[in-house]
Amino acid sequence: MPGTLWKEFSKGLWKELPPFRLVLGLCPVLAVTKSASTGLGMGMAVIFVLALSNMIISLVRNMIPQKVRIACFIVISASLVVAVELLMQAYAYPLYQSLGIFVPLIVVNCIILGRAEAFAGKNPVLPSLADGLGMGLGYTLSLTFLGAVRELFGAGTLFGAPVMPSAFEPFAFMVEAPGAFVCLGLILASMNYLNAHMARRRGEEEPENPRSGCMACGACSRANSPAQQ
Amino acid sequence: MDIFQLFISAIFVNNIVLAQYLGNCPYLGCSKERGVAFGMGSAVVFVTIMATLFTWLIQTFVLIPFGIEYLQTLAFILVIAALVQFVEMFLKKLIPPLYKSLGIFLPLITTNCCVLGIALLVQRKQYSLGTSLAYALASTLGFMLALLLMSGIRERLDTCRVPKALKGTPIALIMAGLMSLAFMAFRGMAA
Image (cartoon, rainbow over all chains, first blue to last red):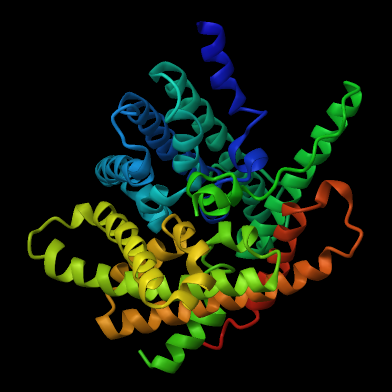
């Protein structure tokens, strides 16, 4: 049992790393990574919602009729997001303000519904919790990494502390919107390159590049499968 | 605020996708063909305006009088989910040709952060009902513009030789970055 739990937990850290391998939930990835600390804060909020929503959905999975499951998943995750909003207003108000509308928008983050649909709706409680924690941690690490890169080049600081030599001229492009897109594109490309390289070294066939995550997301796959039209 | 200025600002300067990072999933997922992009864009315009109308009314006449503004997120997403279902049934029954062209995009829209995002933004900006609806229309037109431009570029990209690691989403993101850079040039026209 601990072995399978570890497997569910660790797949979110590399093999199915949410934003970079599954390409899911990109809006906050682009929007809140102006600095490493906002990325980290957003990631923490997502861990909380994702782990608890996975756990609750898995607990009630046999009670939910198949037809209204998406609506039920949305209600559960929305209640958790309201809880996060209230907690952040009470204990982390500056962070809450800098994240802006992206805190309530966790509700419609594909990663929550995607995991509910793909995993928690079909699996027992403990593996679902492990899956949620692993995916959430992977998401947090990715956001912090992207935030750190953008902050380092865009402002010359890391978690707010200056690290670059004084001769360094901040590259403002990186903290603006275009920098977010280009930086994320380059990170995805290097992940693809790294994976292809590793597969070649193991003597396996090179994997396909992951498709844009909208198709992998719970609600979206429903619209794309002709059987349910 | 001047309505003309609001439109210029929401379509070009603060474009919902390229400057405010909302609605990236359909922007990358539904921009492979121009027809699909147009269908998705018009479905978003339609649903966002309806959703803004209903969430504005709910906020003003239910949430504020009862002092339960903290339930905003929960109430809004439920209203949007129900609304999308109703619109789907309504179109299927009454306007079949429109349903045929928009139908498959409607279920996608419940989890589109554009819709909930705009509904929340107009509350934070404390717009009146008229201004809210104009803002919703202008923002979603900006979304449609970005989506159509992107689909045009991606149809061309298919025939180009892109390095293997960059194929698919990475190159699309870099294109989006360049497009966003171009849109930054509109800054200074309106706040």
